[in-house]
Amino acid sequence: MILRRPFFWIIAVVILLFVTAPTLGNDVELRESLLLAAVYVTLASNLNMMLGYAGYVNFGSIVFFGLGGYFCVYFVSALGWTLVPATLAGGGAVCLLALLFGLGILRLRGAYFALATIGVNEAVMAFVTNFAPWGGATGIYLSSELFQPLGGPARALWIIYYALVGVMGSSLYLSYFVKVSKFGLGLLAIGQNEDAAAVLGVPTPRYKALLYAVSAFLPAIAGGLYFFKGAFIQPADAFDLQLSTEAIVITMLGGQGTVAGPALGAYLYEELRGWLLTSATLSNFQLVVAGALLLVVVLFAPGGLIGWVHRRWPRLRRVLE
Amino acid sequence: MTALLEIDGVSKRFGGLEAVQSLSFTVEQRHILGLIGPNGAGKSTVFNLINGVIAPDGGCIRFRGIDITGAPPYRVARHGLARTHQIVQPFMAMTVLDNCTVGAAFGCQNLPLARARETAHEMAALVGLEDRLDTPAAQLTIAAKKRLELARALSARPSLLLLDEVLAGLNPTEIERMIAIIRVIRERGIAILIIEHVMQAVMSLSDRIVVLNSGRKLTEGPPAEVAGNPAVIEAYLGDPGLAEKLRSRPR
Image 1 (cartoon, rainbow over the protein chains, first blue to last red):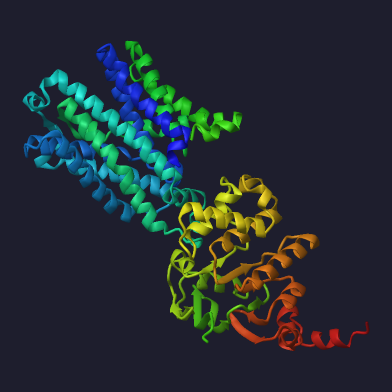
Image 2 (cartoon, rainbow over the protein chains, first blue to last red; image 1 turned 120 degrees about the vertical axis):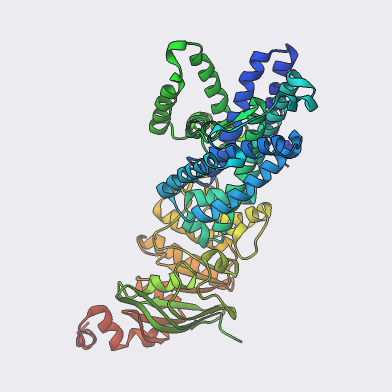
């Protein structure tokens, strides 16, 4: 059974560490760093189900995150909803939208699909920039009073952090359960050879659309929490292709197609980013490093860190899945 | 009792090329039907039409009495129709067992994973791959990849198996081994439609033979009858008198 697999418990330990480490010393700085790591893990894990399992390169995965943010912020500011229903409804709405986009663009393959995903992101950004109810180009500001139901800003930040760690944990477990399920086997088959998979009976259009929708849900929730926390959302931040690219680098760096890879990649990338950001002369220097890392990984270790570990120590395959 | 597979007046045109022209034939339960013809006769197109990789322009295809004309491959597979490809298409990065598990899980019986693995195990053993279960497909030899292709198709528990040149590129020992496997499959009650260029093999395996030439059915009958048909020999060799010459040639 799944409970006997060591990896199930490794995920639990990671979640526990994320919860306890900043809480014990009331360390706000560590919390902010881990919060970003949790967002990265969520984005990368969900992207990995598209990229690593089904072999579909999604360059515009950030559109789910941004839309989730917009729905949540809108529900809270205009309709006066509280945070939990606002994020969940946002997640659901984005899921449905993804299903709709998916039915359109999932007929495409390879480079054409990748280009279409950028198109979706850019089209949504252009729409939102001109959409008056969502503030157009200026975006939406949240009043700090909206933190009151959560017990004031200081406490609200902790609650949002725990919620994001929950979303991260859900992403890891989702990624894991999909991988060991029949759905996951079908996705892996599609990733290897879509035509052969269809001939063997894998319902490829349905599986791809379902995957696209499923992989939209948790990033949308993360987006809702993230932009609620910032109390501000605007198109340029919500649909920033840079974050999309970073999610791809993270997934490749850690090891696409594995569950542990994107998580490990996200943590390392966030550490690297924090370290490089401390120097003012090199602002955004992490992008240069990210580009170089991506090249090195693609050229010399296409399986990423976890892939390398698996090849070096085959026995670890059963532990670090 | 109705035939397992009925092809009824099926046509397919690619631009100006009539790849298949009002073709009709049937495959009976538990029979082996050989589909032969020179290169470019449209044999592989017929396979692609049957299992839904391409849709016909006209005609009707019925499998177990169900109209499957133009149905997508994954739906055809669920009805119990499996195939192998002329150029093997294994999931390279997956193990032998996982390759077969895909076939079993999404095949005719739509099995849950654990039971699909049992079936996969059994079918891998049937083709002699039981000691390579954890080997990635990419590391197999061509002959083993062909057997994997067969095991994967069998894992779906089909009632009809389409075999597209499973013997091509194999050496005599491997051909013998593959023929033995095909006989075992037939004994299990699975009907087979086989495209093959190795004549000796297809003649000895098949109950009936359909000969295609330029997308049309040239003739149909028991192997011995088809082999002696001058029109068939002409289609292969291109010389109307050659059949006579070969027959009268002193041995």
